[in-house]
Length: 186
Image (cartoon, rainbow, N blue to C red; front, side, top):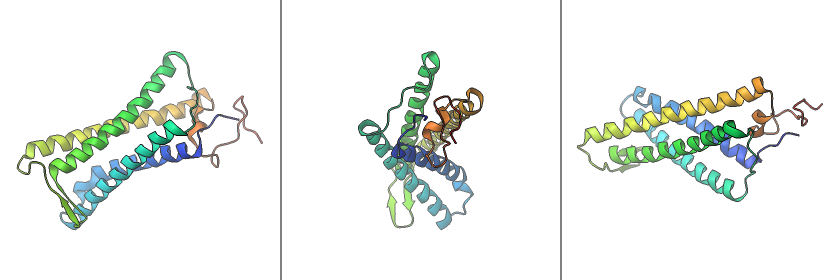
């Protein structure tokens, strides 16, 4: 049987992945919404989902430290160190994007679902608003590129190396039962 992560670790992984994709897509399209309530709602949803992602990451790190499965690296040597470094880079990018998102919200000031306003840090400083928003977007794009490379490497393990690494982060319900040799168990 292949070594697998526990169900909570898998849940946190896929919840964060889906939220990141959704946040990126919404972030790319906020300005397409008509001004007024539609755009306020889109931006408010983006901010709220960003806070949900922040909360999930805190829970994920806590779980990883206290109870989550710790599997050995899938590869050794330089490839193993690169994989570990890539995972650390993904976590760092998630953190940086979220911090920049909070900073952008504070610098820009926002109306949250027309329920309350977050006052702008420096209302007249359009250059600062643009710079922070651009940096947040650029880092979000960088995160998405790294996540895409992460997904490509998982597919490489599955279809080129034909090892069991691909299935370590899949729920048991969708993972085939594999023997130690990587062959499907019937």
